[in-house]
Length: 554
Image: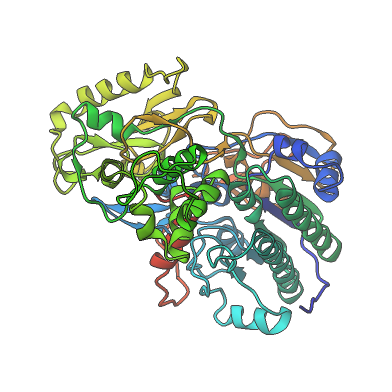
């Protein structure tokens, strides 16, 4: 891979997904010297994430400066009645930071920021990130081909993730993606000579989901990210640097809670049997238990017969021991053509329980997507087949809030830190798209699941979960080495505009961080969709599979 250097930016934002002080403290000393230096030299502190603290909603909040009620994205999915599609940049209904800067005469380079496909027209260059297709439309047209011709291969996703690759090959793939981000960004800075740059690294989050108990994999990926940040700082020579993450991440030490299972037992959720596929996590847990006992009866073997575990059993057991999600286990089984074999290894009643799913049209309330972190009520006149009369809405919602707010796990611990009506969390024209009730897991040690299984509680299918505190650090002339307290991700966009001397939009919810003097507020044109880059891409199925393999879609 060739590399080009040269050029400079005035203000640089480096996004590192899931970075936090806690994550850094658990990495071996010397893994991230560049990140450590930025934190030590400037003003830094925890960065409070919004609700919900997941990539597809948090990064749009960072780059627009408004909450999801203002920009409209609450998770990976966009709902039309009971149907869904993967979100993309057209679902973010507020101007991005670089679009506002373009109106003020600033050129920008943006690489790998999630939910930016298809890009709107602005002065500069953009290569989309997460939720875009593998070969996304970039801005300007033809940019992706130019990048590949200049720096070598450039991909959005790890091709080693679902192709039966070894652990080593998957980690190599993450390191390679990280190097591609840095090389593309440096090339575009030299090409565009921008005053603003924004580069995001996603693999810091992905590796912790994929290898939660592996000490080597995170060290390698975070070290690779740090190396690229060092090269960017050396080659681009920014005046101001803003290091930012969209949330933290850490071990999930509590339980898995399934609201739809609880609601089914209480008659609130109606279910339909014979789903397309069973719950692979449930199957894996059962198979692993049998494997540990050295027994796994089949139709041809009496209970208690001793035999060696089959390849299907060993595959399931290995996947479960690695903390893989139900979707990843399904992908592994499918790769080895073992999905049907696994069904023959488990009791029929277990398969039937795993096959149960929510009948949305006939349910009164339900969790439609765990990433949204909330409950949607099936209201007459709002949903296609609503069953809750609008006159009963507030009373029914209050009943559900009381049920969930007082809920305790089998160990006696509270399930939620808060259970709130959505208007207590979100403001803006798109609050109607949010869940009616927002559920905040206790310390984010409770793993929420929209699955319908036998029991409302179980063992978390993910060993790690997102946490509310990310990190922010700012260096630049006149910015003292100091602690930042009370910073929120909605403060990032006003801070960047102020560093560049551009007016802060009067629609932004946040304010410039205290070490930065905020510029005057101004009214920018209303968001009307902008001029989108021409694209015929339909990334839905491709992206859905990748999100499913990472455990984001159940």
